[in-house]
Image (tube, rainbow, N blue to C red; front, side, top):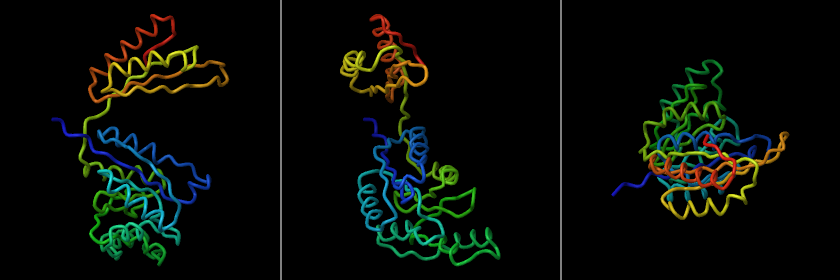
Length: 250
């Protein structure tokens, strides 16, 4: 019997996300990263810089998924409380990590102040996640990966995370573009296709009029068996085209 693919959740931390001041892109980046590793991202949450919210969400997610990825709240300012919250969730101390301290001392030299020193606080028993952009590391404890909120830094940290993960079977996807009709016109055909291939996932994603006045929908078939996905896409395309609907494979 095939072992099920690992599951994951993302916990995005920061008042700036909830206030609308900062647009999150990290969830999309992590989703694509996990898909390439055959890991099913099943949940994404956003919480503010509040201790009880962070700990509660982290405890819930880490017990229900193989992996949890957090972004945000590990910088040098007073509202960067993620490291302390993670330590509290795991019931461990939050000492200075000697290697993290050495990295930061080398990075900042004479400008290494008390605020920047806070970034060397790492939960006891955690291992560092390398940061090739600004050097200040993230960390892994148990099945939780704690990373920066700045998108370029977070994405760079994923390179170090990659080799630590148990991978699964990569999901294959095929997309059909239906033009000239709304998704209601193809809903019944799509539902019938989904009933006939329950091991696959069928999705409908409409696009609006925009400046061109065109309407339509993209139909996406996903599954872990590439041949089955290809066959289902070809069958659906033929059926829609046979009904006089404008459709093309992307």
